Amino acid sequence: MTKTETTITIETTPTGRIRKASADQAIAALAGRTSRIKRYVDDAEMRTLVDQLPAATSRVRVYSGAGFVPNSYRYACPMEALEATRDADTGNWVVRIVATDAKRSGGTGPTVVVR
Image (cartoon, rainbow, N blue to C red; front, side):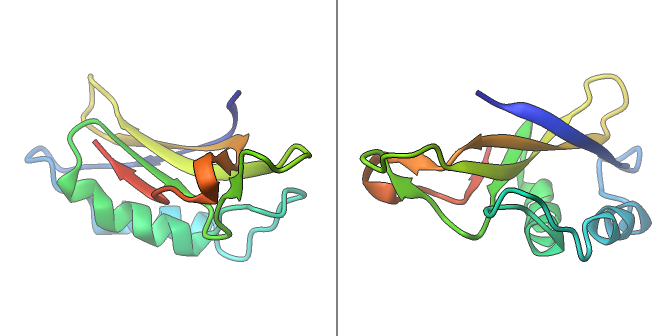
């Protein structure tokens, strides 16, 4: 189950390039951020997301750098991720901080997913 917490917009130029000022503002918005969830995202994950946007066509997801836990882990293990989707009308990237479960098969998986 995913829950949206925050939304940030990263603007693009008419040719589809990311506006540097907009990307810098998005990174600054997460600087020094903390959360009650131990596996939270901050400005380091936002930098990774901004670096991946030029290669993406529709969606980018960057999970917390704290990593995953095995499916056999007994307790709930919440984790945050940054999910960017392209707005069909404006072409801008809409970034959301979502909460998800950190359980993955064998405790491994990609922390960056680009589509």
